[in-house]
Amino acid sequence: MVNKNSQSLYVIKSSRVHGKGIFAREDITKGTRIIEYVGNIVSRKEGDKIAEKQYAKHKKTGSGAVYIFELNKKQDVDGSVSWNPAKYINYSCDPNCRYKRTENHIWIVSMKNIKKGEELSYDYGYDLEDYESHPCKCGSKNCLGYIIGKRYIKKFERLKNN
Image 1 (cartoon, one colour):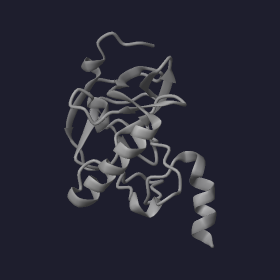
Image 2 (tube, one colour):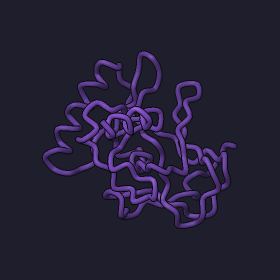
Image 3 (cartoon, helix red, strand yellow):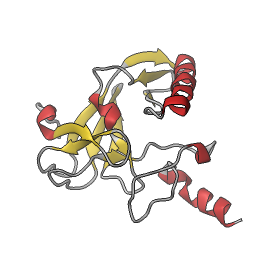
Image 4 (tube, one colour):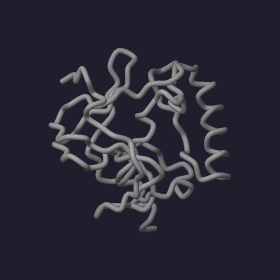
């Protein structure tokens, strides 16, 4: 489902998770394309360099960490631009959204019905490399304590139990 006026679906405000967040302005049904993750299109190599700089700044200032999103095999989206409100969507161990790549676009899509006022979140897909540098503050019952992609959770639990 494409929503022609997706801005009516969300509002940006302070988040208890981290800095700013995006919240549902109205009830959102499962499967709704809520917002597109946009920014400057850069090569994967350039994206890696930008991500390193963004992370270094985060370590110094506590600002948002990394806004690089893999677009395809050759390109990334640098979403740190002022015109990308999707950069404010926080990670959660129990997300209500997911990202979906379609024809060189990245959409944030609801995975379930979302109630008005609920903060939007998705799985960033981070691997286990330097996971301790990415603490999670989502506060969900299932919180792992770190920002770790769903596909790495079993490996993380084995690592933790050794």
